[in-house]
Length: 65
Image (cartoon, rainbow, N blue to C red):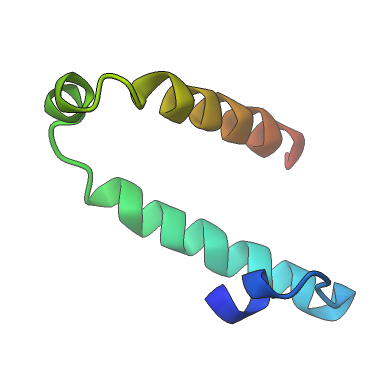
């Protein structure tokens, strides 16, 4: 998957597989999340950027319906 992301262009035939692999990776990462409140307290300065990224992704996922 990371190899595909390094390329500036993704072949349209591989685009569907690429997004599905990325979504599977995200799903697995979300399953491993523990104590987000503790993380937020520890990394307070990073929190606004992380929340912004989450909101952007949520917006993009909404367009994938």
